[in-house]
Image (tube, rainbow, N blue to C red; front, side):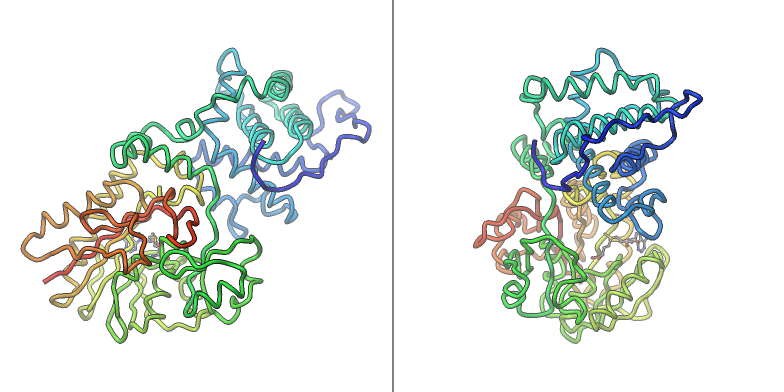
Length: 468
Ligand SMILES: C[S@@+](CC[C@H](N)C(=O)[O-])C[C@H]1O[C@@H](n2cnc3c(N)ncnc32)[C@H](O)[C@@H]1O
């Protein structure tokens, strides 16, 4: 077994309660500790997989799954760990189940598969005793009308996994199994077999927590017990509540992956310049631009996300102009010296943080998003003063949203647009993250810093253009 997460305090030493009321029908609730968390985890997993609801949305304390919001903090942490492991290892768990089951479980049995996935996630990837995971899964199956006929199967399958774990799981090709075919093919084409495998392997671990500091990363790294990575990000080595850390209240830093901090740096010295941050919310890059002394106009289509951006800027003591608008319709009043376009994308570069992405995104999404990216690039290039700089970026690993988009943009605008290649020295010497053409191409399997050798950063693409 591997993984960190919650140490379950379930102990089945007390005499078994009879869950059957006097009429013989199974009870609706199990009183066992941790049952509610497992039930909510299965429900959330079902919502992500079958209704394509993003995991973050389900876990949101303001608008997420009502059962999740009603749980105590330690149970919420357990749900987060179980749902995260179940999605991160979804392919492995499905293969384990295929090896354990003689035939497929029919769709109409509703919850059964979700219950099994939740149990196997605990047994294989979290420090939770088998007996707790199995017993709660069987209870859950007993209490679900459509799953009830399968409670014996749930019990048998999970107990067999406990007994024959090594034979059943030792030869699993985890990186391949945990990556849907279409993504694997896309990465293989872009990065070769070895690259695809390294990326998929990196997705087995959670991302580190990186901060971008207003000034003096070395001093903040020391204060917060972190290390400096990338181009001056502070990587924390311990996990904990972010808002309890020194410097949060005073707005000395904000949470931002080391890779996500690189595109804004490509604008160079922007002090006193008019800079448009397009698709700005929740404002990680806006904060960088404003902290560099630029006059920032932050534009985003989402009023709710812009509200968060404004709150973030208030905490950080940074002043920017915000505009809620669809870039496909908006017309700026004046031209800009520089533009950062952080276009909407599939977010396949953030799978370590969002393990639901491979399962809720489809090739069709990449096609639709690519069309939007093309439209935005073509539109906003005319918002620059002559000779202005445009940085286009996405947190995607897909060429169609990165290199392909940049090449096509250059091809369409040969007369007016030139690529300004990225130099590794501009991004903290991360030579591995610069392509021969001069694009920024970060991958989760790359080291975040040559000195530290610290592993991993979000997948990111950026290209810098000068527009005449
Ligand atoms: C990748 S996120 C931006 C992250 C942000 N730049 C940061 O660093 O924190 C993409 C953003 O694009 C916005 N967006 C999507 N389509 C848009 C459009 N047509 N016009 C303006 N904003 C749009 C979304 O609301 C979302 O906030």
